[in-house]
Length: 337
Image (cartoon, rainbow, N blue to C red; front, side, top):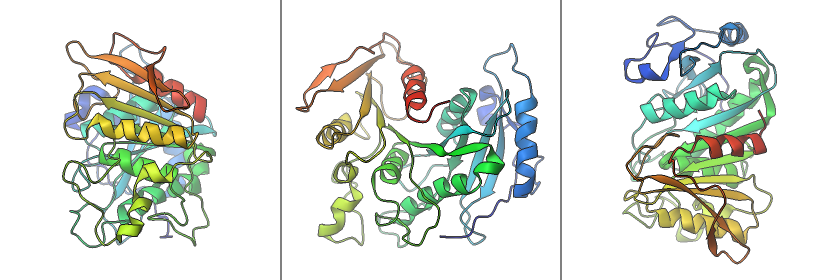
């Protein structure tokens, strides 16, 4: 495993494109922050009072190096205002972008991270190696990078005020796939695993937002440089078993980028694996939304599967499309609060 480093370069006090999310920076632009200073900066965030103005602010440390000095990929740390604690649960969020683009600080990533942080979680939004399927060094390094984000959180749990036994992983689109691979495949022997790692990358919950499941669909093809026999190792549907953590699936029924049939396929595989999961569909929602999808006629349907894999409408349906409530309920059940 690569050495853990903590360096920080902050781009701005309030990023213009996410200003309405009320995310404040905890360090000045260009400041480099050592890991020893993180507890004090986190305490500064916790000490700030909640406000009457909504949404309440959250505070971010941006562009932290976690993969080694030779890597450009970084992560952002989010801390909530309020009670200072040493045992908060944490969520690692993985951005989307078709495996070739996207960023940890894009609007969707920032929005989801800020919402989860306001609910009391320490949130880590990470980057990972990007590139086309033909580019060498991308697969399975992208999976390894996300595993190492989880390892980094666990290694620095004390500095972050996090309980190392209560970490979940979440992601959207390509990030949903990566979250599934981090949570379902073995962190030592699976793709991007590290048999020599002394720190575990295991998680206690997985949130998959309209994630890629079957690479044979929508022109994505097979994973390059991997034999036909080994392809199954890269498919979440073949990695799930009853020892894995629970899964929350969120998907829009009008998604034309990652067809909702992929989430149906995942749900059926989780039934076979006897793995606990929740499946929330947002009627008429397209691809890519945060926890507050909005659209005329959109609504939230919860689909439960019985032991035969036959879907039936569950009790958690709503005329509102917002998926914050089922997401936070899932996290409370899997990693607490």
